[in-house]
Structure formats: C-alpha cells, structure tokens
Length: 341
Length: 168
Image (cartoon, rainbow over all chains, first blue to last red; front, side):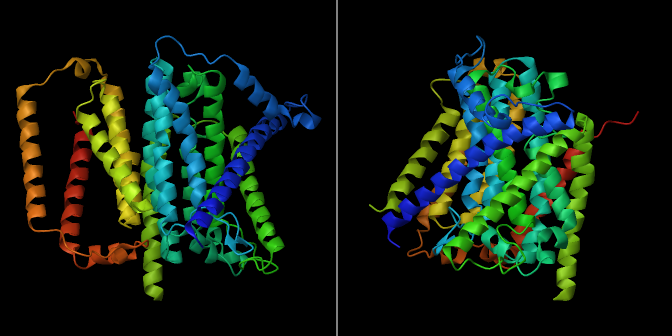
C-alpha cells in the first residue's frame, strides 16, 4: 500500500473509532442514570424523547450553551488545560485496540503496534495529570485534596495493573494485542478469564481504581470532598471531565475485553478466525461492541451496589493484598510454564 | 527530506526547547511549569526512540517517567507549597553543584563523540518486539542489570526504614 493510501485509511479508521467512542460514551451516561434510578427504585430521566433517550443530547446542548465561567483565583492556563488532558487517555488507548478482524482484508485496528499492551499502559499512566492539574489549578482545598488523592491512588494501582498482565504475556508470548486475541481462539476455555482468573480479578479491580469508579472514587467523594477535583468547574469544562470519565471507562472495558474476554472472537460457528467475507467482519465488530457494552454495564452496576472505600483501606488493599497476589500469580505462572516446557 | 527526517527535527527541537524551559523558563518560576515541560521533553525523547525503532524503550520511557516519576514530582510540589521556590534566587552551593553536574555530563558526551559514531547502525535488533532487548539484558548485560536491581532493592529497603514509625 502506498503512503498516502495508508494515511487516508488510518485517518478514516481513527475517525470511525472516535465517533464510535463518543457516541458510546453518551449512551453510557444515559445508561448510568437509568440503571442508577432502577436500582434505587426511581424512574430516572424519561422526558426527553422516547424513554428519555434524547437526554444525553439535551445535556450536551445545555453544557455547550452555558456561560464558560472560571472562578477568580484559579490558575487560568492549567485550569483550561486539565479537562483536555483528562479526555486524552481514553481516546488514545483505542488506537491499539483490535475492534474487529478485518473488513475486505483491511485489519480493524488503527495502529497494530508490537508493543500495543505497553502503549496502552503508558497512555493510561499519563491520564492522572488531568485530575492532578485540575486539583492544583482550582486553588481551593477540596479539589486539592482530590488531586492529591488521585495521584497516590493511580500510581498505586498502576503497579498492580502492570504486574497482573504479565502472566498473560507469558502465555501469549507477545505484547501485541492482536496476537493476544488470536491466542484466545479455539474454544471458550481458551479465553484468558478462564486460564488466568486471578489476573482477571486483579486487572478489573485495578481498572476500577484507575478510572475513579466506585468503590474507588475517592478523588471525587461527594460526601467528603463535595465532588473533589471538579468542584470549581462548570459548563463545558465540567462536561469534558464527565465525558473523559466515561471515555476512560469504555477504554478500560475495551482493554478487559481484548485481554481476557477473547476480543472480537466468539468460540462458536468459526467466529474465532479471521473474517473471510465483509459481513463476518462486520459481525466481529458487533461482537466486540456487545462485549464492551456488557463490561460497561458491569462497571455501572457495581457503582450503585457498593459503598466507598476509606482512604487507608484503599492503600492497604492496593499495596498489601493486590500487589503480593499479582507477584505470586506471575511467579506461579512462570513456574508452571517452565515445568511444562 | 523524508517524513522521518521531519519528525526527527520536530522531536529534537521539542526536546531541547522543553529541556531549556525546565530550568530557564523566562515566563514563570513555578516548579509545576518546569515539571510539565519535563513531561513534554520526555515525550519528545520517546518520539526519538520510536524513530530509532526502539518501541519498547519508548513505551517504557513514557510509562515510567511521564506516568510515575513526574506524578511523584507533582505530588511533592503540591504538598510542599510553592511560595518559597517561586521567590528563590540562585544560591551559591546550588550553582556550583549545577555547574559540576553539567561539566560531568559534557565530558561524558565529548568522550562519547570522540570515540566516533558507529557507521550504518542497523535498527533491526530492537525492532518492535521486546524479545531482543530482554535477551540482551539477561545475557550480555546481566551484570549491570543485576547491579541495578541490587541498587533498587537497597533503595526500597531504605525507604521502608524511613517510612517506619519509630517504636517508643
């Protein structure tokens, strides 16, 4: 393929992925409000459009039209920079996620990196700056507490997250996410969730902590910090934090699906092989999206069923329990592989 | 010039400019601005690694430095408060230390350049996969690697000792 053709196709794929991600984020916000309402025995937003389906659009219009207001004593530059930084990782991770096999022979991943997994971890680790900067720039105490909490929390759980995927790499023998999906084909019990259940549990817990979702949403903690890092924000800047949170959640769900739940494959009807026709390719993308939506549903459900951790409990869980478990799992997997070889 | 050349100059200029802004920012003496420029500098270096086809090194550079080390810097900057540093002027011991460090690094750089840049370096040994790098680390460079791990272990033990509350 020529350079210009490559660039055009990559741009097209990137645009499609971004559009899909943003509409999925809007949908996730709607689900969050509806599911939360159902769990609490309420109705939830049901006025805008049928079943309240137009609620995300109404929200978007509202936040766009509101006055772009910044309180007097904030550090202006960092205050505007923070929401943009918060949006970045959720969108950038999608570049390496294989969201389908191929359409007419064109591989359905924006960038097929050989170190895709490391790239995802690296981009994810940069995500903390949005919240930390917001906390610093707001120049007031609750956001500051939120920012401090967030930086410590995300660094702690990043270690667990990084170590929990090492057994997967040992099994797959590659850092390429496409290769990791391929090695999960050939039967339901080839999925990493069944071969590495402990790694799955650790990765999911770490994902919750990295995306600031309950039970680990200490940087926002409405009851103690009245919203934490986003207290001083309003209108579109607040909406960007909000959207960023859901984008991060969807990116985390996509990572979980790719690493543990077989990516775009299904173990039946030969759907775990590269697509031969256009329609099978489209079906693979649909399967991937359905899996991501199920995981996002799990994220939302968890949020409304669990109380929040205390900060010392969070740190103790991360460093004293999850980290040793991740290390033990890594050594055990390496030992078993060595004994078998 | 090819696309790679353009990208090289872009990343190289970004790295040098941001490195200058870390230590000599004319607009702000805020340590936070320095830390953020350091992140941009690290990202530029990661870009240069990618151009050298050392993808693994690039990802680890971002993961470790931008993702963890600078977050800790920010943590410390935010927790200490900024007023003192913002007003601080140059002090003699700091200046002498800085000059000594610069001289050492300059000497190492000069010595390296004097030994000559190897011709036709092939990037194939590190291309893409992390396997080649791992192999090198555990065979040819195993001694420096193990010395580094011993150093890190000593640092961890030291931190635990500092962090422990004294028993009364």
